[in-house]
Image 1 (cartoon, rainbow, N blue to C red):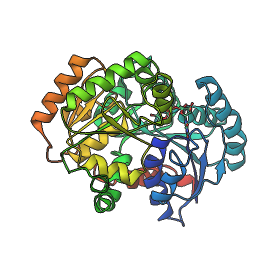
Image 2: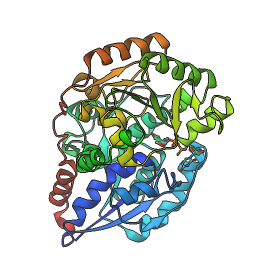
Image 3: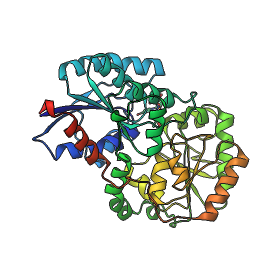
Length: 370
Ligand code: UD1
């Protein structure tokens, strides 16, 4: 029996861990699994709803660390996860993505002498003002197994001196989850329920501190996106961090849920959001995951950042870097709209089988634990 322990904490972690947990559950004779939730995200709409819809088991342990500064959040996870890891003493600790919980769990596990596997390794934006970039670099530097989504990530890791034997190009676990749920999301017809015609609206998400923490920057981006989308409605599911910023800047309030012509709604469930993006004419976002999801769906995406750690979505997919200036956003959106929906051309191994590959590799790698 190989004993694995996965640590998740924030919304994007759940979609990445779910297919791995399901693949492990299909081999109960071979794998034992413990799920730890740090509690970095805790609202039902940011956490519990995703567990339900993705069919994830309730966490075996919840550390309830909650929100705080980067220092507080990272420190709380380190302190709380250490005794859990010590008691469980798993053969491998799996961490996913690049959030603070990923960093804290990886460091703690490694210092306890445990093997660490990082899922979604090797992504690099080269932007050290982005907290996630620091998390990625640190986690990759200490992980024993690095599971990558594309060959560019492998090249990044090799350039940093990582031993090629530790790197495994397995594909994209988040796309595993997307493909599993696509039919269900389409059947839901969330746009139709909101009175939106397919292909006649845009989606917007914003949550990066660099975009939302300055009211001027935030207002400028929202205004530029409104101009870029033209006459079509823009649906804007608002992250809690962004809602706070919009409210404190007076850009939105309970009586005025539409900021600058944008239809602001609460964060959506996984299926609703997938259904919405599936039929959007264009998606504007500063999220990492959404760049990949739109590429898999063949939906044009304008990324509201100057850089991306996911260049494969620009090279092979439907993503364009719009930056954060009005001119940049308008130009990228005009090109994206002119090109229109592309037949979904998925990067290599974004085929719904990434989690299976991870489980096979761990199986082969740890025969001594059997
Ligand atoms: C975190 C991740 C980011 C990821 C994002 C997805 C880090 C460094 N950042 O950013 O990479 O893209 O999650 O959402 O780990 N809040 C709530 N309810 C919740 C959780 C948060 O209201 O359930 C509010 C709190 O006011 C909190 C703020 O959102 O202070 C930010 O949450 P936090 O987890 O610190 O970072 P995110 O911006 O969500």
